[in-house]
Figure 1 (cartoon, rainbow, N blue to C red):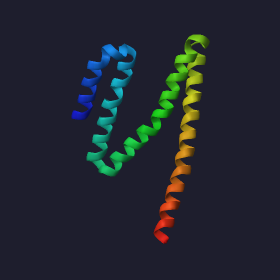
Figure 2: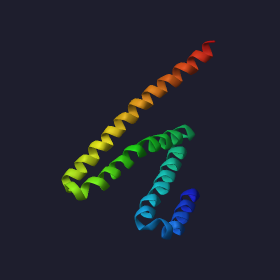
Figure 3: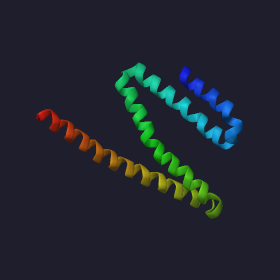
Length: 118
């Protein structure tokens, strides 16, 4: 919890440099991440806390894609089309992330299994 507090204080100090948009967006990440990781660790151990952090990290790619596409499309195409395009982008990035995670995870498991057999 102290780490999340320190991160928020640091972002608050950097707010004049970052501006209200970026400092507001960045402030949510350390708070949410630290709270979820602490609760997972206390409830189920460090392996679950690692899984939560890994999942949050992988989910951030689709989060960024959603807001990047929304930023570009909402004023040009309107709210409904902007949110539909942003949602489609987030789903596409999340699917790509899942495919890459499975492919890389299988490769890592195969190589570590192969190393143990030798």
